[in-house]
Amino acid sequence: MKDIDQLQARIDELEMKQAFQDQTIEELNQALTAQQFLIDKMHTQMQFLVGKVKGMQPSLMASESEETPPPHY
Image (cartoon, rainbow, N blue to C red):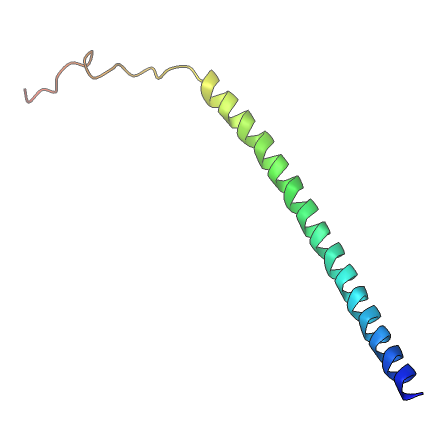
């Protein structure tokens, strides 16, 4: 009878460990899903910004070679 009680205790302990591991895996999966959603959103925003920067008109300032020298020259 003692052996059966020990085996039952071991089985109960293993079932508890599995339940905690299942819960941990689910929590990690939810965190990973949220992070992937955020990464996808940031990727889309980055693509939008790159498109905006590429589409900007060149600066209206003249280049240094075209600028007249300051008065102290």
